[in-house]
Amino acid sequence: MRHKILLVDDEEANVRLLKRVLSDEYDTIEALSGQDGLNLLKEHDISLIITDQRMPGMTGVQLLKESLAVRPDAMRILLTGYTDVQALIDAINSGHVYKYVPKPWDRDELRVTVRRAIETYELKQRNTQLVQDLTGALSQLEEVSLGTIRALADALDAKCDYTSGHSLRVSQYALLIGKNMGLTPEEMRDLELGGILHDIGKIGVPESILWKPAKLTPEETAIMAEHPVKSAQIIGDLPSLQKAKRFVMHHHEFMDGSGYPDRLVGDDIPLGARIILVADAYDAMTSDRPYRKAIGHERAIQELKKCAGKQFDPKIVEVLVRVLGEGAEPNPHELPASHLGVQLASIDPKQTGRQFLREAERLARQDKENSPAEAKPA
Ligand SMILES: [Fe+2]
Image (cartoon, rainbow, N blue to C red; front, side, top):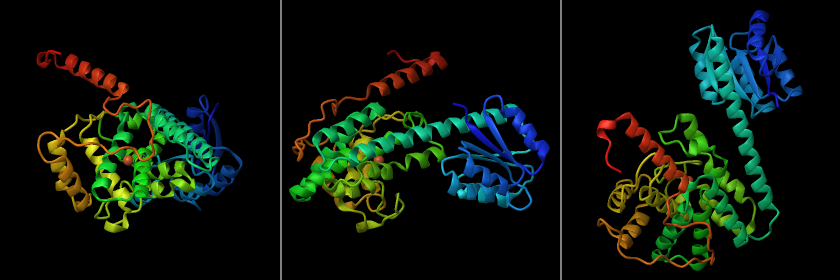
């Protein structure tokens, strides 16, 4: 399918030039003013808007802002020949400009930027579709069934294999904490469901971000940070999952209000969400991830204690420390039995994901090739 790109510039020669560079790969539609551009957006299914900043009537930034109401998913590129600092700040703050391209632009660079923008657009479309499909499937159910939970956890497992067992382990650590805090069986059930489902929204995060073996860019971090809301969306309106849904929605809120999505503070964060956060952090630190190795029990506990009060609820950290101890190895402990009786067949909580192992092996080989003198025996 050929994507449609809207080109907006008050100088006709510039529009023609853009068209010449892009029209062999894409369908282009041209406008000579912001207002004309907006009208065309209403009529055409546009994937990308490329606009000049300085135009009489409506500036490029204004056009891009207004275009959000008509085509929220379209990508946006701003061209400007002026060092218009305010326009740039506005464009960046509005958060919806994919790239700012200074004029005069280079045709090869512009082609690459446009190709990337279109790729990102396609990814976003696919992910939106996935989340919609799942949400739709769930909303048709009246009661949650164990089969549904298993299907969801398995779907996430298939998507980001390195998390294999992560959700199950988080729910088990959460239960361990909950039991030692004296939660009721009903609260334990919601906690367990929340633990299993907390990261289900990562199904909507592109593999290129989930699997990136390096630090994420600010844009990628923002996409990643949408996952609690997406998780909650997927859970939807199922009556039996409403408590678990609140835990899931807020499992990245920090005690000092610096978390997301709602920057809740202290006890305003649901208890279940505070417990899942600690369980999640403990499991993340004691498991290998694409971007780093596990740091082990002792250091994980030190980290939790260091961040107690700021990120974590100190009462919850205290409970986990009391149960697992502070030594090199966790105290012998028995994980509480499931309150759902759920067996996640495809997940072995002790097994690291296969894809992650392959990726780690690939990186190790690369390291070896780059520095043969320091290569260690396998
Ligand atoms: Fe998460």
